[in-house]
Amino acid sequence: MDVSIVLYPRFTALDAIGPYEVLRNLPDTTVTFVAESPGEIRNDAGSLGLRADASLGDMTSPDVIVVPGGPGQADQMTDGPLHEWLRNAHRTSTFTTSVCTGSLILAAAGMLDGLSATSHWLYLDQLRDFGAIPTSQRVVEQGRIVTAAGVSSGIDMALALAAHIAGSDIAQSIQLGIEYDPQPPFDAGSPATAPAEIVSFLRDNARAIMG
View (spheres, one colour):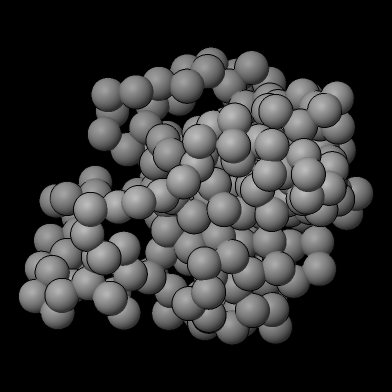
């Protein structure tokens, strides 16, 4: 099975690396980072680079597509090579997925029209502008299209994919192998549970804090 994880300038690292760490452990699976052109792509902070080993044109029919989010998503909203590749690759993919604001890229490519989808909570309502139906669920499955909410939810999404692809025993084995057993020190991972003043602070300072 071939998995393509899309990279573009100013992606959020965990959006790509979280799913990678899960999906690379599936049996008989090759995970390839792809971009418009091969080479190093820097993350949103500019402090981390991942290498795209293949161009979009090199990977025309992956079984699984993962589109991460990040501040650079804003530069990927105009129809162009990435959108065209996504539409074409989706015709034969088993699953086409996104993490965080990567769903906005799918939406701008015309792939979420009339479908329920999720994204980072700060950007969730923007999905409406592209005909999608926003939902605050952590992982949303709509047939072959699966969207995940903010950043860390990409791990949950990838584990759900692993179960679909290889069965729940393999998915649970992967979860145990990466010791994914979240026990955060604060109940502040959602605007529904975080203190109101923290939600307000992040709304006002998201660009400075998140890139």
